[in-house]
Length: 345
Length: 193
Image (cartoon, rainbow over all chains, first blue to last red; front, side):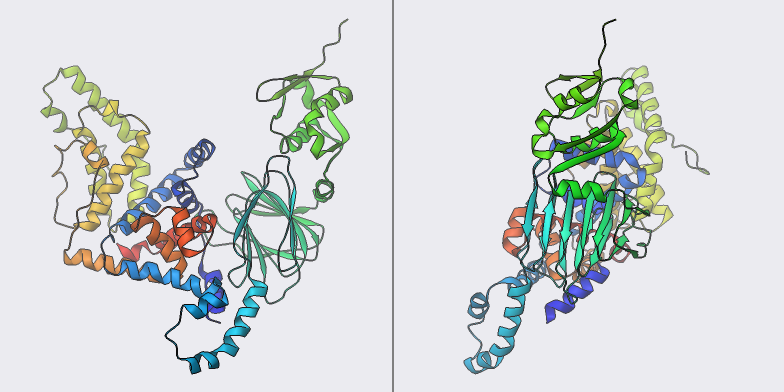
């Protein structure tokens, strides 16, 4: 029961700021060149990013001064104990308290068993799931919900607390949430937080914004302010067919459900374009391919595309485009450049 | 430039260098340019963490004085801004550590390089004990696991995978808890310093 109370307070009071997220990310040992580049770009975006990041480092410097403090080890161990009580199996829990008298154990057993059964039904070990470029994958969670992951997606599931929590690190995923009124299903993606009880919705997170599309039921979205001084915005309720955009600074816009057809198509492994500008279509195609298609001359910007493409056959997409439009494709080492076909007089 | 305050003038720093005059002149020009470019952002940072305007001005001056104490500031490699931030950070945290025991300008003769390998000396003055206690009470406000992540990484110098293994959470969760814990400490910074 203690865990429930804990989870509730956690939900109410805990927030993160982008600078702290960057700080935590840069301290991990999985920092690659791309991340460094993104980090530099983020720093340069705004001087306040630089300032806040330096404050994070200062906090860490100050904590570092606690080295050798006699209470530190005890403070650290608290978290380990917390973990044992919450997630270890029944056997381990019993083993870890050998000093407890038998009578007391027997008395506690009923309550403990009930607690453990509930947690084993409801808690799923925290895990990270990801897809490669062009890959799609369905994850079935043990609460009955499913997550359909689209190309280049990374998400983390944490069902150890009171809420069913998913953090969408990048990419796009569709959530078909099993109803459970006592345990909200929460998806965090960038500055947006989606909270539902049972519904079906998709979340797309790219570098600049998060898009939430509701396919069924209703969801509520909260945008967290990018800068620590601002208050988190209020909840926005979204109904079936509606979409919402949250940008990096926490600005929210509710829009018509323009991507519902697109989501429907990718779930079937297809990309469907109906008379849309070529560059827009290419942007979408490029999400699924390792060699992006680039526009090589301005003449292509006025072209429009209609067609159906299969995601698992996009390696031949350049050829299909050559047949559909007056263009030629030149394949380079890292990309494919499209240019207008020059017709001999 | 910040209104109401004249630009810093570098007077003493170059005098110690007997080299050719044009070299000293180039350095002076360089430092004045540095001040023009980076002063505002450094000031904003110092205002975020230091309690009084007096402290802010003091540290800001010392940052540039230390830079002037460097033999060849023009030759500092890498990200110059990050370098300035590092000096400012070290001086500011130093200020929490030994308030009033040092005076601005004491270290003009120190090459700024010393600050990069700066290592805080264990200090047991009553003010430090007090600050430690305040910091610990801010850490106690965090949920235990978040606190363990921060302490594990920053104080015990464990890697994320090591912490994850020990606490039974994924590496991504460690990273997330770290972000939460740092955000919390930032919000409570005034309670610490």
